[in-house]
Image (cartoon, rainbow, N blue to C red; front, top):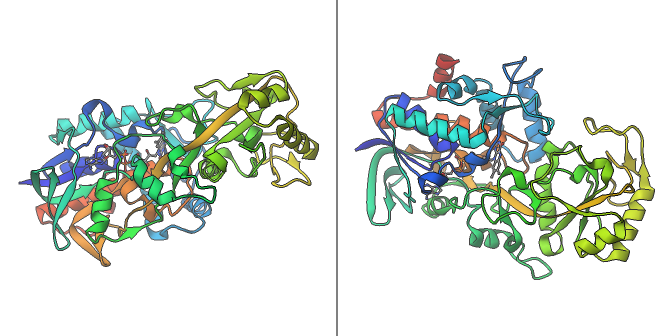
Length: 475
Ligand SMILES: Cc1cc2nc3c(=O)[nH]c(=O)nc-3n(C[C@H](O)[C@H](O)[C@H](O)COP(=O)(O)OP(=O)(O)OC[C@H]3O[C@@H](n4cnc5c(N)ncnc54)[C@H](O)[C@@H]3O)c2cc1C
């Protein structure tokens, strides 16, 4: 019988598989996707948010634990477990050497990245290179990998894992790590979670999925129905406003449109609906998907003028371009008179000070609702550009409740041999909101913990604080 069964093929699963194997366990990893689509959402990532007290290789200055924690506290509005959050934060300061030992390379951010040179370490070659390196290392160490292996059921004996099932096939193991992502690819479940709005729309029908099509939440649902303790609200997710022309799945990072803070955002009725200059883009960009989801028809329009060009990462799809504002309104299909009134009101309300997109500057509006509190400059210089944006779901936050050993809980009691990592438990730390690079920080920390614990459970070794011991051993 195999010692440790790991279900999933993304960052959390691979971290778990590698740690379990390093601890001496035999490991089988089951990935739902075919080999060419392996790696889940992790293949689309770019960076990891890292705590550091002083400059460290690719990271400049310092990003101490307390600042990281305060950033997380702010974006989650307190919907976070401080103990688990701090565990992930601390783990982010020491994991890079271990990642390098499995072939992951880091680089400083290129220009156009979102104010994150201090806080985030970028993967050379992006998430695709990271998962490829981990798969290579895992296979070299003897981890067995099966593709096209979507697990559809888990067999339990009380709170103990017994076996996983793929159709009629039964795979036994001494312990198991669930790392099969959220339910973001499951459009029916998204529809149910978001429900119907007052206009009779089903908002989720207009969502696009930024990542993999394989995170259907099958095991999340199975485990919750089997009595595992859940955490989080099914309608909470990382949800970004992305180009409305993006594909339904796997559009990835390049469909994001980063100019919202440089202009105004309108809804289908050509009205503004939120402060576009509330905070720096990396901290606030994840709120815009949800804001657009709450607008009629789940569509928004980011409007900028020539002054914004060159100040944000060029999106993959060119914007709609016009030499006059009425022409832009017509091309976007927005009511011209309302559009012109909205822009005129906004322009008249702008109090331009010293424009500086790298700080929370003093360019703001006065006398309009909603206000634009920073980077407010009139939209008055041709050519003008408009981007139609839709909610793009990155990952959902409903997950399984864990303790610091990543154990799945049943009625408040931790399982002795079933563990969970990554998106399947990120909701313990992320009740809502997001700050760039935290997804991989949580997945790396808890993937490593889950793998270590699963190996200990399988090999009959007591393991109370193995992760910390391991950290010291490898740092
Ligand atoms: C476009 C995009 C960009 C992102 N950029 C960043 C970033 O730069 N930094 C950051 O921190 N986070 C980023 N994220 C979020 C990040 O991807 C996730 O937080 C992280 O990858 C989660 O890792 P995971 O292993 O839990 O899930 P995934 O990487 O999604 O892996 C889940 C795996 O489970 C498999 N699976 C699903 N169901 C089953 C089943 N029933 N049986 C077997 N296997 C199954 C899937 O095929 C997949 O391999 C980004 C996400 C997207 C979509």
